Length: 176
Image (cartoon, one colour):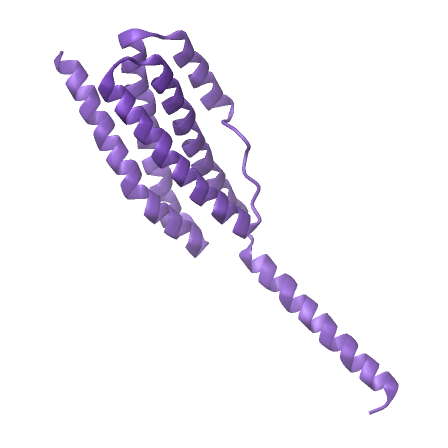
């Protein structure tokens, strides 16, 4: 083998290895719709953590505080899982709640007492968890990425448990 043919063979080998690395990296990137679903899941977790912290500060109801602490703890863990997946897939997540969730937080900040408790449980507890349940089911059904589907499957029973708990809090409050 001549020097030029060895050089050509080495160049081909390096080029091939670079192509295979870049295609493997591209395979790890999420499709746009999957990335969007992951960002939505992140937003849902961020919102629950923020409203949970607000409920811990504003509510004097022991059951609401217990629920809020569970929201902070479990959605912080969920957000950590989302961040891990996003990092592995090269997806940039928002660094805080979106405009819609910020508006809800402002609304909650203006409320107090039973009005706060009622709105928190109905909106953040029931409404937001219904929306997140729908999002996770859609992700399970429509996502192309197996890891994203697995994350949605892992999170769904937790969110359904939160939803059931929130519905019980609403029912208890309505009996009073």
